[in-house]
Image (cartoon, rainbow, N blue to C red; front, side, top):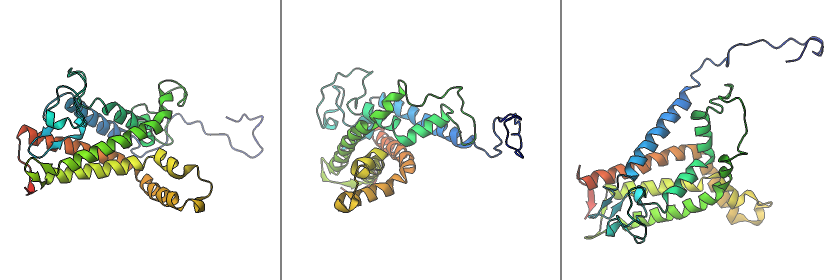
Length: 268
């Protein structure tokens, strides 16, 4: 605060405000919804990953993305498209080859960082609302230094999206031949949304055109950069949509595998 001795002539003293914030709107609502939404998804995904059951529908070759690729000795043979080379211990997820990279890709995502910094860490919870911590160190210390690895997790996520795409294609070829049902629509929808979220990543946008000095000399990359930039504007929405499509695909396949209801078939 400027003292009386150094305050410019005619300037008013800063008001002494005891309240932490003068915002009267429900600024706490968005962080609360984020906490509830992310917590619910993490609980559901954790339960499903370690359930080790109801992940494969042999009649239609449906494999839930939570178990793709299935690589432990516990995996059903038909679901193990890339072999079974990890031990079948309970603590090891059946998709142990990909789940850690997917988790790290989302944790280091620019949107998700904003989401959990504001909601779980209150740093800060909203604009014009004080930080919940006395000190601010940024991302300069462990483990937040790992946020700088986001680009490399993006590469891994791209490979995983290719694997999920392969799973969706295989699901059209059931033991009876070509088939098409509601499960196929859900799996394809999930794959499309995953690709949209993955390539809308800020790192992808920078890789494609962030370092170009003359777009006119790189017309193909410029068009790709323009397309990715348009998706990047929706990165937050795509981040949430893909959580929904992942849960939907997993729940639908779990319900079919558990025998709760039958798949709605259009062909075969």
